[in-house]
Length: 241
Image 1 (cartoon, rainbow, N blue to C red):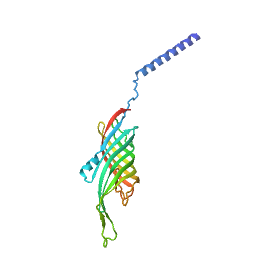
Image 2: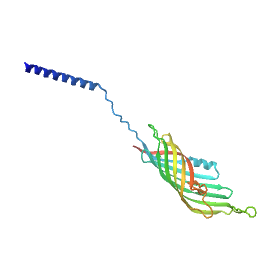
Image 3: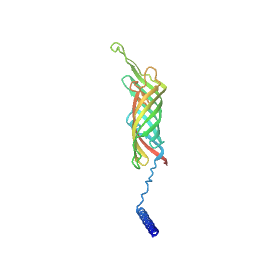
Image 4: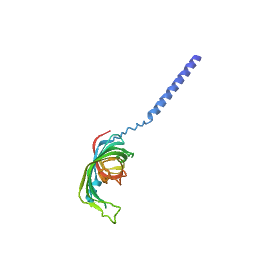
């Protein structure tokens, strides 16, 4: 009898366990599983080429200036771009002592880093960067006056004989802060400000460089220059990743 009761107890316990397992399994089957988020954002990679529309506008409205600049960048990583500019400038500087025309070409190269976190499907930039710039230029000294401390008794020396100083060069570095906004698909409008530090320059005889193409005004040999640009550019899409 005892063995029979023990067997009945074991059977009852097994049935209870079996019913519990079936119940738990049924509850698990009724829970709706949530799929993992598998959205992938693909970034556009390509060559972005444009021009400085600010220099073009200034060339039309300023009779003493003409210039043109082409800019380009290429995305290396999500936030990192390799960038550069190439251009030509001609600037006539006139003051009470000098009438001089500076003209030449320049090239700049460096990197830009996008500090802006874009929303989904946005591709704008708030960026900082740096450039290394080099310029080859010449000066045409159209006329000049020699300042004399003895202005009452002595005559002021002046010359209107044109002199040319060619083969001049300059090298500088610059820090850039700017923005680029995507107006339409792959079309961008940009604005940046530049702080330039002159590293080396070829100085003409008897006077100093007053304007260096690409570097701009020299501010009385301080070695510091400034600049800005308004750019309109188009990115040639190559691939996404």
